Length: 257
Image (cartoon, rainbow, N blue to C red; front, side):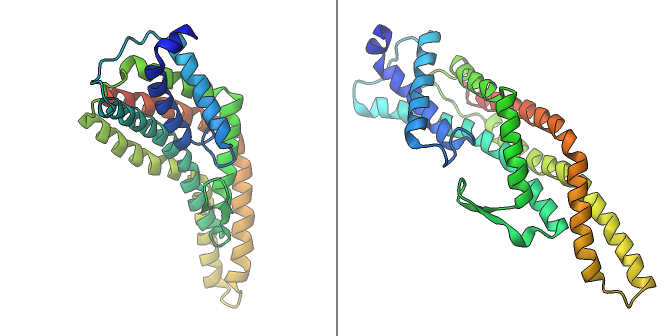
């Protein structure tokens, strides 16, 4: 507490980075989490960081503009790191959108009160499964550890945006679509086989109403495929967490001086 008293300016800057991250990142910053919980968690993590890391005194002009520039930098770092987590989680929403479009559930998207947007049913289902697996496997500890590691690479007030940062975000967006398609590919493949079979039946038995037969058939086979691949979701969760950790580290390196 004595160190906190003499380093209150450093503590507030750490708090800016933590709070901006928790507002952006899923799980920590969902709308179902009360604001005072986010603030309390930001204060707690900031206190742990300033107690465990050796952060020297800061040198900035003795007026509010100099300190305000440091505040802006810390908020920017927190938002950029939280956006990485946001991108990885929304991969599941895109995969769910692709699956629902094939099955026929795209017309029944639900309103998610957490994100305040229309989300696909399958994507919302995948999202909560991944959130549970991350909490069970202590993945949130890894995220907090990477935040602590960011202070060793990006000192307070020492942010420097490199060209590597833009390349990293472009690469993340590309991997975002590739991973979503891989997650949805088993369902897309099974529905493609069903469409081929229905096309053959439409040629051999034109009197059969393929719309009446095909719609429930796609739903049944789509849900059956999801049930079959559910045991593989643990491996998908591990891969996404490893990719998330690598992306966070790459963004940190893209901001290092």
